[in-house]
Image (cartoon, rainbow, N blue to C red):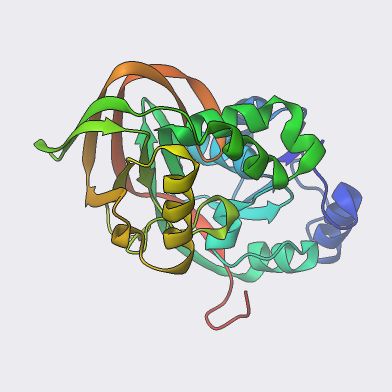
Length: 293
C-alpha cells in the first residue's frame, strides 16, 4: 500500500527488490496518488487474502490504512510501516527508523503487537487528534507548505496562529464533567510524542484502553512559548496553561465550530467532538525487544 508521491532511500523500486530478496516475489501491489484513496485498496487487499500489509507513506497514509483495517475488523492482519512521510509520528513513537532496509526487516521479522486506536467523529486515529490551535496549524501546513518546507511548515504555520483566541468549550470524560471554560486547543492522545518530538502526553499508552485528554489555555506568543518550552523540557501537566486527564469516552461541545485534525491530517470544522478509545484495534509490526531505535 504505497503513496506514490512519497520517497525513502531508493524508493519503491528498492522496496520491491528487498521484498523479492526476502522471498516475496509477487506481492499484491497498490499505489495511490493521495492517502484518501488508500482505504479502498486496503479493502481489496483484505478481500484477496492479504496476511501482512506494508504501508509506504506518512502519517496521513498510515491513518487511512489503520482506519480501514479497524473498520473492517481486521485486527489480526499485521501492518508494517515504511516511514516515507514528513513527520512520521507513529513510526517515531514505535522506534521504526526512517531507513528502508530496517523498516522492511521489522515488517517481515519484527514483533507483532495489538495496538489501541482512538476514534473521533467516526474515524480512527493512531497518534492524536484535536481541534483549535493544532487543527488550524495542520490545515495551513497541508495547503502545499508541507511539500515545500517539510517539517519546517509546522513551525511556520504555528507562528501564525499563536495569537488565535480561545473558544469556550465543555469537556465530558466518561460521563462526568471535566472542563468548562475557554481554551485554545483540545487534544486526544493515543501515544505520547507529537509533532516536533514534543512529549505532549507523558503517561500515554496505546495498550491501556484509554485516551489522554488535554486542553491548552495559552494565548499569545509568550504564553505559547512558555507552554511549548515546558512540554519540551518536562512534564506537560506542569504548565499552568495545560490541563490533562484520561478516559475511555470523551465528548466536547464547542461554542464556535473549530477545524479538527487527526494524525496530522486536517478535516472540516465541527461544533461537537465525540472521541473514544478502541482497544486492540490493529496489529502493528515492531522492532525486536532491545533493538536500537
